[in-house]
Image (tube, rainbow, N blue to C red; front, side, top):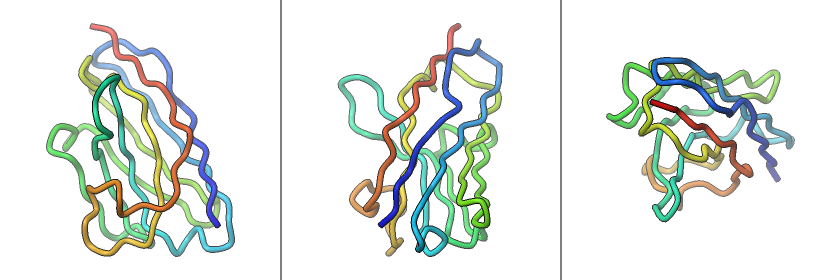
Length: 124
């Protein structure tokens, strides 16, 4: 059983930065791969970034590559998403997710646990 809670979202101007946090709980937290997804109204949940259980493997959606950085601290049961050079199109509800990664890191179906989401709003 893994429970996740996101925080750190809020309003920001284009070009600014935010750091999202995902606080986890559960004995097996560190055994899970994790990811960030985002969702805009009326749209399907979109893959943003992935990090393996050890933090040694990361992937990014092309739209955020070079601007966002994913990291995790298993000792603290935390995952982070550092977002720089934010654009209005980054506006969305951001969700953290965890699962036993089996190959398709960008698919929502690969993840068993989800947080409630945190709103990021980037103004032009």
